[in-house]
Structure formats: structure tokens, C-alpha cells
Length: 446
View 1 (spheres, rainbow, N blue to C red):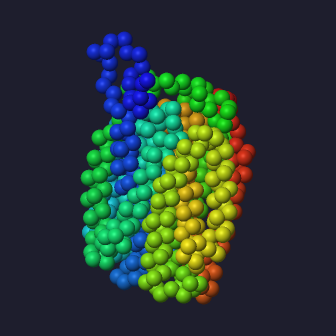
View 2 (view 1 turned 120 degrees about the horizontal axis):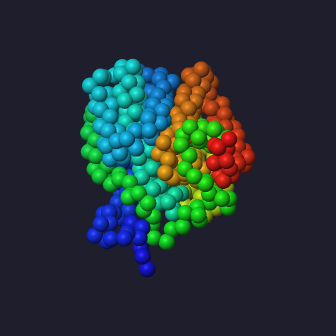
């Protein structure tokens, strides 16, 4: 029996002339290496307490502005990356993204402690590097694994979630790099590491030969909750004429807004909640909040990408999206009240991280289901701009509420969590109303 994980060309007429095709497991290895580095943006919370102190003296809002600009630049650049990939190829695009990301972090060290300097180096340049490389493992993975789109998109981006754990812990409790080296030197060291690891991962970011399919795979078996698969691959201009695009995009905005808000503020909120309700010292609260983000949120974020992807292959992307967003709405509404108890803080961070990670398995797979696997790199770039919008709305909103409610103490955080819960509930309702994938091509042809 043929091993389905070993790539092979489809019925070559002449074995000697058949294209050399690599084992597609290497694609997963390369994807994880690349995404581990790109996931550094989720490690931002480990730096925020230090950025509020001397010599930076940032406000809570300023710490979130740098984060949000990085997210927005990341999202916008994915559109550019999707259009460049057919022209320059996935290998060069990946290496370019790694180089730009590394440049941003190295420049942060050279520019110094100014808010504007970090906004440009980490936010704009670093965010652009992430956006250039991010879409490549997804597009390459879907072409190598058309039979398991949910699983492969989950695996391809799982490293992004797990990367946060590595970079947070190296900077914090595992490596103590911030305490020993200082924030700016950590940025520099990370930049060098990103360049090396992304370049290594790019070695396997290659498309399969034209017409290749895995052994035993029948394309007609790929469906959206039992409906007919998309009839043809849609170009971005065609996709933009479908209602499915705008509904998926809005759902992604609301789902991303909630998860990114928690990533941006969990350290600040957790410290305040644990001091106010559990009576912890500042040092104890910081260590506990850091564990909530670096261990429970980060690991659950990575696991959620794989599990939601696998689940969606079984129950359908439609049902998985609704279930994920509805459960996220409930947890966002409860998280403010859970934050002052360490065990409940860990539980809430785990559930929110798990659901948030699901966005990055389900939405690219849904994009391929609706609009075709061949054009998923370009099309998902447009869908992914929703992530940038959510990244601006969520973290900055929370920072503004906290700064405006300085005299209110911990309760200043409450409105942000309630708005995040409401947004996820709206997204779940949109998911219930989402038309079937089989109607996408019909809408595009009108």
C-alpha cells in the first residue's frame, strides 16, 4: 500500500523523465521552522512591562500601538506577498521575509529607546517581514496536502503559536535574556536568529510539480459541510465579487480582534488582576501572568491550530467556525472575572488561545474550499487583511480603555472584554448565515 505522506508524480509516462519530487513531510518541517520565527509578534507582551519603565517610559496605549502597527503591516503585506509568489517563487519570498524581519529587530537595537523608533523598526519593518513570509507555508502546504487542507494549514501555522512560547520564555524565565542583556540587545539577538532559521526553513518551501496529486486522492471528495466543492479556482478579482468573501472577512476581523487583544494586554491585565484580587506582589503577579501567556496561551494557540484543522476536516469548516467563535464569545465574557485567580487565569488563557489559534487553520482552509487551492496564496492575502484590522481594533481599544480609566483601577479593563465577547458572538451568527462553497463560483460569474 502506498504511503500517502510520500509525494509522487501522477502516472508518469516515462520514469526516467519524471520530475524529482521530495517527501512532503519536509514541507511541514520547513513550515514550522519559518513560522516559529514569525510568531515572535505574539511574544510582544513579555516586553510591554519593560517598555512602560525607564528608559522607555511608554504608556499602555503606546505599547499596544507598536503591537497593532506590526499586526496591521503584517496583514497588509500578505496581500503583496500573495501577488509576488507566482513571480519570484516561494523560496525567494520566504528568504526575503526572513531578511526583512531580521532587519527590523536589528534596527530596533541600533535606533534605541524612542517610541517612534520601535514603531518603525519592530512595527513597520518587522511586521512587513512577517507578512512576506507568512503566506508561503500555507500556499505550499495546501498544494502538497490537498487531501488534508484543514490539518496541513493547522500544522503549517502551529509553529507561529508555539514560537511565542519559545521567544517569551527565552526573554523571560527560561533564558532571563531581558534581565541579563536588556530589551534592545534581545531584539538584536532575535533578529540574527530569525534570519538563520527562516533561511533554513525556506529550503523546503517549494511547490510540487504541476498536476501532482497524492496517492489515492480524489479532488471531488473535498467538500464544505457536505456541499459541492468550488467548481473552479477564482482569481482575487473574482473572489471579491462573492458575498462569501465579505462574510469570511468580517468573521475573521471579530475573531482576530478578541484573541489579539488578549495577547497584547494579558501581561498588564494579569498583573493588575492578581495584585488586586489574589494579593500577590508585583513580582509574583508578573511571573504568574507571564506563565499564563508564555505557557498556557502560547501552547494552546499552537495546539488549537492543529486540532481545529483536524476537526474541520471531519465536521466541515462551517460547523467548526461557528463552534469556535461561539465558545470564544463565552470565554471572553468570563475572562475579566477569572483573571484574579491563577488557576482560572491559566484556564481562560488556554481556552482563548486554543480558539484563537483555530482562526489560522480554518480561514485559510475555508479560502481554499471556497475559492480554490491553486490561487489560495493570493486570495488568502486579501482574507488575511481582516487580521490587521482586528489587530488595530482589539489591542488599541483595550489600551485606551485602560488609560482613560486610570482612576478606576482593574475595572477599566471590563468594557474591552465585553466588546470582544460581543464581536465573537456576531461572528458566530455570520457563520450560521454563510452561504455554501458551491455558490462562490456562481456569484463570481455574475
